[in-house]
Length: 419
Image (tube, rainbow, N blue to C red; front, side, top):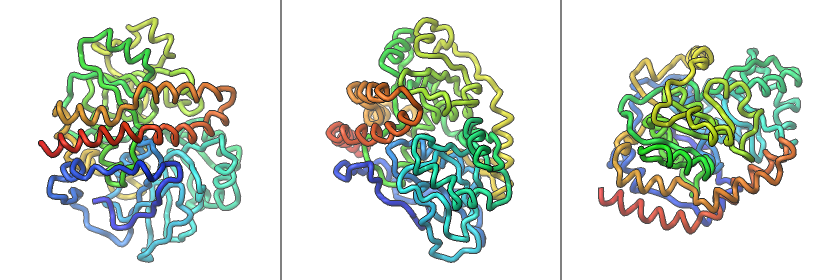
């Protein structure tokens, strides 16, 4: 299901001592018999297709790849986003098409492809301005040549990145984010819970005090180093929760935009120490947004029981992206009746016992959450310092959860076995 080749390496940011597998759960998600669930019904062609994979603790990266996967008839290769320049086609294929969307980038900063068979579509890109090595990799001679190579404008995820690219001499435009194209999975039915994704303790408790609905709290930052298949399956589960929720409050871009794409009422709560205006530029106009203090003083801004519908301003960007991607690859899963999920994930939504175990596994402890926010606040002075700090926070966020992860995984395995 996930391709025959993997160009990925263990993350230097994730301690090997907390490498945790969930074989029983993921065997179940694949159908119980371990059979891959592809289901595209699309014949292999001379042109092959690649998808980005990652070595970070942030499953928001996989969400971006799942969005791109909608437009791939199959995945022949996985290529680590941060090691694109080291990929070598083992089959000497005529052409390997890659939708090269996402957040750029982490060490080892291997940006420019060296394999001549790679045909990248540079679109929905965000550039980390806080790291000189990223700037050198992307805007040095090789990086600029790579982005100019296809002979078409480069798509930036946000207007600020488009402006930066143009200042480097690139023909760039604001494409929007690929996650706006995420397609609903019709197996997933609406549930009665409210979702709180990485909001502060204050917002979480505030929302709980205002509704009788269950409020589930999750985070895309994981406390276990999962395998590639487990990462994608877990990201699918998170997306399933975004689609199933009655309403959602979040501070995360890759919860906000997928929820918008699914039609789930969502509000962006701009959390102190976490919100970086440049990252959300242009994109936050697609949803209702407020600072944390504004929301805590005006609940009717987003009443989770009666939230109303989302704005529809994103639809033009969404359609433009759909046209761009489907023209590039010649394929759209929606035309084949395929949703975003390639697993049995929809069967989990509504299974209270199993969901409870996974919820605990995906929810960071309050202590870790407070440490995460407090550390970010220390470097609030400049954007470059904030983004450099995020890499260190990601590493410590994972490492400190080792004991918690082991305990929760044991409980999860027992519940899956019982099912």
